[in-house]
Image 1 (cartoon, rainbow, N blue to C red):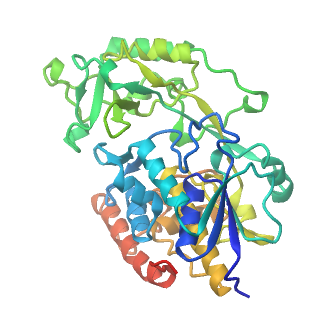
Image 2: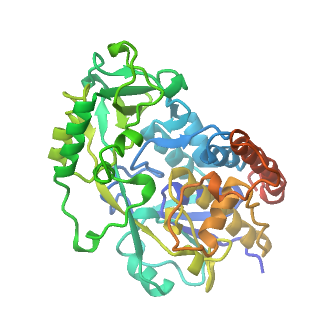
Length: 447
C-alpha cells in the first residue's frame, strides 16, 4: 500500500543526498536529512554546508553536443535539479566547462535545503539505517567509519575502495603573468584559463622531480591503491613515461605563447578560475598525494608559479563504493530491502554531476514508491541519466568499476554516422527520448 505521510530518512547531505532530499520534498514528502558534519568531519571537508565541493570546482564540459556530461547537465535541468540550478546561478568563467564559485554554490544549496518546509536538516553520525523505514544512503566516497561495519555485514561482501586526489589552489596575485598568459585551447571560451609554459628542458627536469618526490604516508589498508583512471595523481601519470604528462593534462595543443612569439610551448600547466571573484585558481589535472613541502618545492619549478601562494595543497582521500550490480536492483534499491535505496558515488558513479544525478533518480523512484505504491518507468538507456543508471545496476562484462558518464555508455545509433556527427546525434537522441519519460514521472510543482 502507498504511504503518504511517512518521513523519509536520507543519510548524507552531499551532492547526492541533497538532490535526493530536494526531489522528495518537492513531491510533498517529508524528509529528515542527516549529516555528520560538523559533529564529525572527513579529511577532505572544511565546512558544515550541504553539497560541499571537496575536489575541483568544475562540473566539467557544458556542451551537450561535445560532452556526455553536457547532455547530463541539460537532462538534469529539465528534471528540476537543485544542483544544476545552483551551478547555473554561481558559475565562473571556465571556457566550455561548467565551473562554479564553490562557497556560494554550497551556501545556495544549504539555504534551499534548510528552508524547505518538507526537509529537516539534522546533525548525526549514523551507525545504520532504520529497519523497515524508507531510507536513502547517500554517504558518498567518504562514508563514515561508523557506518562501514553495517555495510560490510549487510551487503554480504568486502568493502571496495578507490582513491581521488585533490588538486592545489593558488592565489591569483602570486601568479607571474609576465611568464604566464590567459587563453583557452583553440580560443574556445576566450581567455578563461591561465597557462604556464614549460620548454623541453624545464619539462624534463619537472618530470624527473616527480619521480623522486616524497609522498604522504598511507595507512596499512591503503598500501595497494587501486587508483581510478579518470583521476590519477600527477606523479603516478609521470611514472608511466616521460611524455605521458605532455600528452595528458600538460598537453600544449591549441595554445600560443605571446611571450615567445606566439609559438606553442613544449608543455603547459593550465589553471582554472576557482571562485567568482577570480582570486583563486585551480591547477587543472594536478591531483597529487605528494607531501605538502614537496608540492611547494616542485610546483614552484613551473614558470609563472615560482612565487606561488598555495591556498590549498593537494591531498589524498579515500573513496568508498559498493558493488552495485550485485546488491542493488534497477531502481537503486537494496535487493533484499526494497525500502532502502543507495545514491551517489557510493553506488559507483564518478563525478559531481553523476553523483547528483544518482540522487535525483533515487528521490524520484522513492517518491513514486511511497505515493502510488508503484515504481515508475526507468529512464531510457539512450539518455545520459539512463545510461549511467544502467552502468551501476547491470552486471558488467568485466569487474565493476566506477565510471563517469560518457558517450561510450550510450547504445549505438540506429544508422551509421560519421565521427563528427556521432556525438551531436547521440545528444539529440538523448534529449528527445528524455521528454516522454519526463512527462511520465515529473511533478513540477509542490504537492
